[in-house]
Image (cartoon, rainbow, N blue to C red):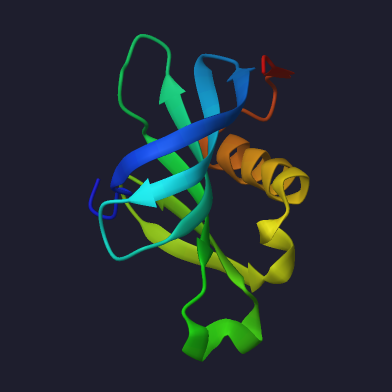
Length: 118
């Protein structure tokens, strides 16, 4: 994964089971690279250790903050793309709802139930 987030430390805020994937929403993230994420939702296929997809709320650099304080990222094996910029991605509930929708769609899990575990 070319643009995989580098996470030194993070606090799990929520956990989900979605079909054959687990998803963990992380907050209080200390990054090991130049990006500063407020939240990351990492999707991991069952039986694997590494995420295959991330949805992230990155703090927008000050020169671009007029477009929104947070950039919503979709990061997969094949691409890393900013999906939107908006202040609302800094809210945990709003981010979680949209991040799950994006991840489910990207992974083709639309028919699977989203079960919140934590």
